[in-house]
Amino acid sequence: MAAAALMAFTAATAQDLGETIPSVTVNGSSQIKVTPDVLYLSIKLDESDSKGKVTLDEQRKAMFDALRKCRIDIEKQLSVAGMSSSFFKKRSSLSSSQYELKVGSADEARKVFEALDAAGIPNVELTRATCSKIDEYRAEARIAAIRNAKERAEQLAGAVGQSIGPCFEITDYTTDVQPVMRANLMMKNSVAYDEATAAGAEPEVDFKQMTITYNVSARFMLKLDTK
View 1 (cartoon, rainbow, N blue to C red):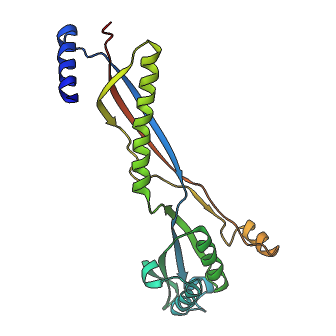
View 2: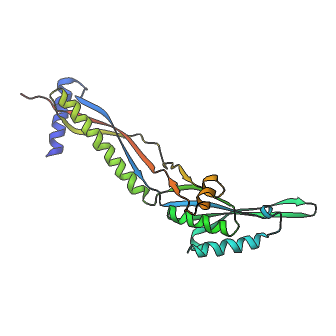
View 3: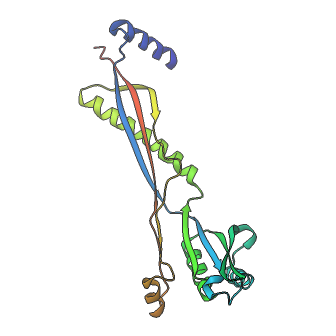
């Protein structure tokens, strides 16, 4: 019945007004802030840090021991990102290797930083962060955006004494595939870290929340006044 009524309404409108359909076009938007729960740390082991006195294998063992103390599942959370070797002195070379560690919270990241620092591994950096439920939040933001468009359409139609009918066109022009999250983590080499450690306090981990933004355009029919 609803579909038949819509077809009848459209036909009558087209007949009375040519090809013009009385309508209102509005934009809708939404923003959702979420806290990241998937963090990636870059760990670099480099023999040049000790001028060759500590081998790469010794550093690797120290790293594994430190991560196990933090209850890190090395097989699942740690992956090799790259390896290299560069000449340091004649007929000798120094090696380095890069790892990526996946952790699930800012507190876990802080513990890893502290453990690696205590193990003599200075090259640790937070590289990126995301949210494990990002697709769910995107869907929520998308729905909120079209609802926002409907509210705006109702307000505009009401301002001229009319009301809206069915929505017959929706355009999602959001282009953000992966929301970018800017994260700040106090590094162990920073002045703030050193001051906090000297004062006996735990260094803080500070994250900016991810902002998921959706934008849509929607077109609603305007109901004709039949009185």
